[in-house]
Each structure stands twice: as C-alpha cells, then as structure tokens.
Length: 494
Image 1 (cartoon, rainbow, N blue to C red):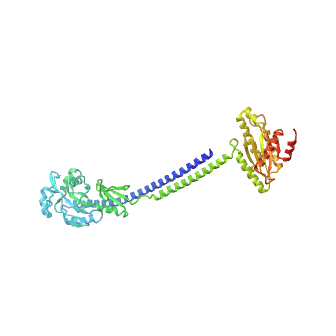
Image 2: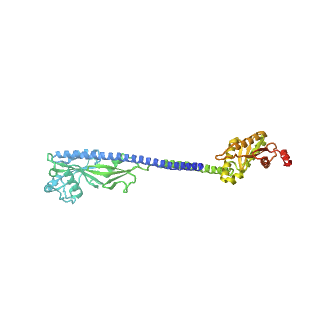
Image 3: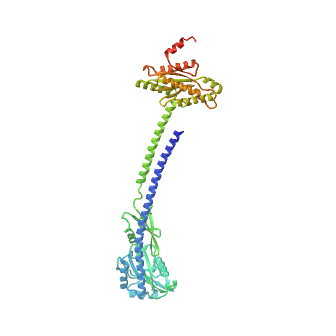
C-alpha cells in the first residue's frame, strides 16, 4: 500500500511538471502576445496621432483662410495664392481652392470677370437653392502641390450630387465638413474638406441666416496616399499599413490584416481607420523551449519512477519469496541462503556460529482444540518473542508449521546454549492475551565453523537431531548436538 502510494505520488508529480510546463509556456506566449499587441497598438496610436495632427493643422488653416476670405468683399486670385502658401506649406493638404457661391442671375457676369465659362466642360447648373435662387459653385482657381497655381475651368462642384450634399451640410452647420472617398480634381483619390465663408457682419445664428449669408467655401484636398505617408513616417519600414474609409480599404492591402491594431483618424467630421500590422508576431521559441524542457523533465522523472517502481517491485517479490506470509520472518528458502552465508563467513574469519532449531510443544493440541486461527495467533506471538531475544546480527526464520530457526553468528557453544535457554525461558514466561497455558519449545543446537568441511545439510540435520533429543528428554528443554552423548543415549535401554 505504501509503495503504491509513493508510486502514484510520483506519477502525480510527473503530471504536475508536464502540465505546469505547458501552462507556463502558454502563459509566456500569452504574455508575449499581449506585449506584442500593446507594442503594435502603440505604433498604430503614434502613427494615427501624427497623421491626425497634420490633418487637424490643415483643417485649422482652412478655418483661418475662411475667416480671411470673409473679410474680403471679393477674393482675388492673387489674394488666394498668398493664403494658399500657408495652407499648403505644412500639414497634410495637397490642394486648396476658393469656391464662391454664384447665383444664376450673376453667372454670365462672373464668367466674364474671371475669363472662364462654367459650362465649358459640360457641367450644367445644379438645382440647389440659396433662398429661392438657383446657384452655382464654380472652381475657377486654386493651388496644389505646395502652392503651384492650378486652373480648373468651369468645374461646378454643385453638379456632383455627393459634393453638393456636403456643401449644403457645411453651409448649414458652419463647420468643416468632409466628403467620402472621391476622385480629386488635383488627381488621385482622397477627400475634400469644405469650410463655409459667410458675408462679413451677417448674422449666422440660424440655418436660414447661414444660408442667406453664405458667399462661398474654402476647399481643401487630402490625398489618401499622403495621409498614409504621414502615418508611415512614424512607423518602422517593414510595418504593413491599411487606411479604411467608410469601411472600405482606400490604401494598402485590399484584404483585411489579421491580428492588426486599428486606430481612428479624425479629419473634419469624417473618421478614417488606420490599421497597422507589425511584421512577425510574438516569438514561440521560448514557450516551445519551456514546454519541451518541462515535458523532458517529466518524461525523465517518469522513467525514473517506473524504473524505481520496477526495482522496488522486484525487491518486494524477492522479499516475499523469502518471507513467511504469517509472521514476516524469513522462510525456509531464505533461511538456507542465510545459513550458507553465515557458514562461509565463519570459514573466512575462522570463527564459530550456531544454528538453533526450536519446535513448539503440544502445538497440534492447540490447533485441534481451538482451531487454526488460535494456532496462527500462537505462531505470531512466538515470532514476536523471538524477535525480542535475538541480536541484530542474528537471523530468524520460520521453517514451517510450528518450527523456527535462529542463526547465531560469532558465538561459542556456551553462548549458544545461554541464548537457547533464554529463548526457552522467554517463551515459557510469555502470556498471550487470553492465554492461560504457557508456550514451551524444545530447542536443538548445532555448531558450525569448528570443522570447515561441515556442510549446510549436516548442520541442519545435527540441529534437528538435537531438537528431537530435547523433545525426548521431556520437552521444554535445550540440547546441544554432541555425537558421543547421542551414542550413549542410544545405548540406554530406557
């Protein structure tokens, strides 16, 4: 039972090491994954903040330009070129334009004064109204690419339903309003941001007042690639970046990036999504090494436990093979091995030893009268008494039935006789629980080591003969094997 408990404790330790190493490896991987995700998000946040800061700077400049245009009764091309240098010098704007609101009644005069024809490219008037009058939103001059002049003859922003809606929302809210992703007049794709310009000094508290006071817009263009470049400037070179506008990829891979960090970028009233994917990922080498080491240790420990258990089992089988099942003493097989070893040791050392064989008196009567369980208890009591009487260097065995043997090493005839008499006396005086009658034994003694040629069988036979001589002498006595005395007993006519 104890061996089995130790075995299962060892197996539990093996399982604990294996599971612990795997759990630790998973924990390390999860921690590394969290660190990687945090690093990736920090990169995305840093890049988004940089792109958003540049965009906010540009939108702020559009507000300043709109305030300047509001103070002018009529903004000239030269004046716009001056303020456009500020608009495009820093920030994320790629182009800027002044978009006046032209009532239909003034369209011809406006065309003549600016030397353009609004219908030149086939864009007709829109039906958006300021008050009750149809209006145009022509783009007749602007700048792009760091201030170089650009002419866009006759393009009416109001003819584009999408831009028309954005213009109307900017006009009615008096805030910067951005379009969805569109094709830009300056080339490429991106968004337009419109900031309304109202007549200086006019009330703009209500929507109706703002519509009445509107004179035009300052428009800015943000190319997707340039906004992405502003974000990429804050990221390592091998990082993958995707810009999504209205849920659709506008820059970068067409497909989604797995396990990427997403951070919003706010431009005017529109939100882009910056998706950043750092290369690689959390390292799995350390978790794998940790798990492998733990499993290796668990396997090594398991092999040691199995080997130890096998050896212990073999020892247990060997012990059981040489042990009496009732008393736990050596059995006859083990007794013969121990006697042979004691005799060999005596020959080497030139010393003498003794073999005591004792047989309980009237033991058959105990079994017959009280049953075998009572007889087994008597045998157990005798084994307990014998254990108390012998030395650690001596060997005790049960040869079978009620017969016991004691091997006394390094002793003389006198010492052997005293030891045998002490055993007989101890048995006689011992009282088992509930037992009234004493236990007595007949003890025979045979010496070995006096004649190196004496065999094991001879010694056993001599001790057995002496034991029967003790029984013949009336039991509860001790006899030392003496050939001459035995011969005299044989001649005695009794």
